[in-house]
Amino acid sequence: MPVPAIIFPADPLNPRRPDPHFAWEARMLRELGGEHHLVDHDGLLAGRAEEAVRRVPADSGPLWYRGWMLPTARYADFSAALTARGGTLLTSPPGYAAAHELPGWYDVFEGATPASAWIPSEGPVVPGPEELAEAAARLGGHGPAIVKDYVKSRKHEWHEACYVPELADLAAVGRVVERFVELQGEFLAGGVVLRRYEEFEGAGVPAGPAGANGTDRAADASGVSGAAGAAGPERADGDAPGTGGRPVEARVWWLDGRPVLVGPHPDAPRRTVEPDLTDVPALVRRLGCRFVTTDLASRADGSGWRVVEVGDGQVSDLPRGIDASGLLASLIAA
Image (cartoon, rainbow, N blue to C red):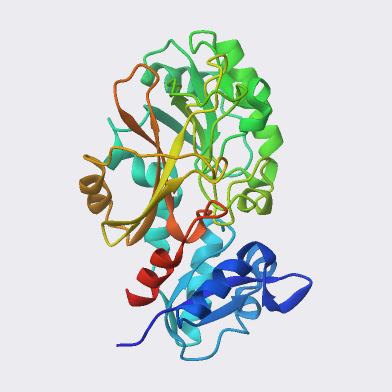
């Protein structure tokens, strides 16, 4: 059976080498006996998929991607361009969308993750007052909430474009949403999401928004402040202002329903985390996506661990200093 290769983004300044953010993964992959190819990420974003994959050999067989986040439509183009060259991404476009965008995974994880309501849109459109009122009502109509899109929040503009202290104050909801859409601009993914705010256990560091999911420049690549990783973060939507600490998050990497790597969130790579995964494997298996990540945080009231974000494993960032050899070995053995 063919051994999967891994595609990394090329260095924009030296397209024969991996992007510096992923160079250490490529080196580790070589040490494990694996093979990698390079893709022009900027070309993918610009809609030039056939040109972007020209460095991927013809008839390359099964492939994983490890890189900056891509909009779902661009990922579908990427997949089609590889298929035309005899390669097959092991995460299909529908599988990527299911793990990458909140509406794709929310129904499976409902009850294990903060309650959410969303308003689809075509481009950076501010929802009307009636739409916002209806979304707020689906969350109970009162209490604090987070504003984000299907993939990212603006956690670094916490009070301006992320946190809503009271859903009953629809004027305030509208102001935060309007500013969020303005800042996201053309990079707004899918629509606007209102997500119930929950307080998570802090780590005794200065208060501020918690994490994200993904490759933490990936968000930059999408034009989002405080990017998650190319691999993509931006996930701790339960950031807790005023609690005195950034939530302590764990990122868990799943392959075919099994946890193959458990570590800290990339925003806090030196923290020790031991999440309770008791109920999570069944949810991951039910989602049905081969390679995903879950970010988990412990509730401040001691009531247990919550899934704060789900992401596609191809575009979720690894914390610096972690031993990813087991993860990479699992991917090329899949």
